Length: 416
Ligand code: UD1
Image 1 (spheres, protein in one colour):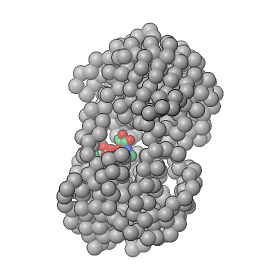
Image 2 (image 1 turned 45 degrees about the vertical axis):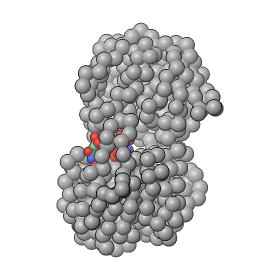
Image 3 (image 1 turned 60 degrees about the horizontal axis):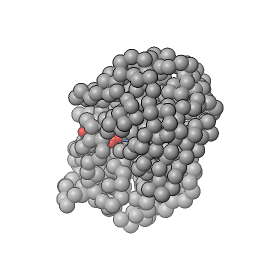
Image 4 (image 1 turned 135 degrees about the vertical axis):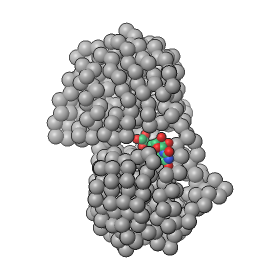
């Protein structure tokens, strides 16, 4: 298994280009299931999770070609079963459930099961499909859903779920009648998907707010569309600038999608200059501690919680980071402590006392965003940090060691 070796302590500077958003590309690729014909999607990142969803779609008979620009055709769907082998690799595989039922009238999708950051159930996806008239049974570890044609319904999500909102928006696009999603998630990736579906001929209003209305249509048509930039990748590089007293120009990004992070980094003493599709993040001196609470968008994203915690480990003062979205997302804490961080967990909060310096050590990635936070910690640490279980980072960051090296980091991948 590959490892990433980092000799920390270098000031990062230069320009980094942000890739397409993984979390937008996944539902956009799944939306091809709704259409008969070749779609063209631009700005698809080259990531393991993208390979997984393409393998899953291929297992249904969907054809696809290309990498950055993916052409994809679900004209022939020969199977409606998403196997355990593929779903267990990536929970977001659940995104095929809504479109398959809507287009084919049936789907058999393995239940995703637990993951490192908590139980992450899919009960709200299932409840919504039932409310739209689908018969849904849980059998042998699989969700089996059937419906000749889904019916529009008024759906209230107990929790604003991102993939749940996306799944049901896709299902509702081909349902009969109108579906209203209340307490819907408002993430930018949902707006990206709604834009793609609208281009396909769907009638959607309110994406980006907590009430989304979808008037079902009989068929949709193929489209050419673009995936938005990855706000989590952009945020990771901005934090890297803060941790290394660096100066990084982040290009091909959407500053509007990361306002919560920008506000916190400014509060911590960083200079963030925002432009149209780009920004500059400058860490002039050691950052100040700030308190953070993760929330659904437009609150502070849980997917940047581990990275901002890495920054707080070397801040001036005491910081409290509260995780409200997932119940078990502090797996990175014990690894950060190995690097010399002073962190105590109290329930769903972590109390971080800034230390003058981190010291390199061997550490292990436990999930995607935790891996990113350990790379950040390694960049700021004295001596060498070796991160193992790098496959987690490859799920969601494109060529991370190359992008950091181009900014002056001493970072290399060791194949093994
Ligand atoms: C998506 C993102 C993930 C991000 C998360 C929260 C993708 C592919 N993944 O994950 O990177 O960390 O949003 O921003 O876009 N919940 C239920 N029942 C459900 C569904 C969710 O209880 O049926 C709970 C979850 O356990 C969690 C909360 O709702 O506590 C939010 O989860 P959700 O928004 O669904 O996360 P994902 O869509 O899986």
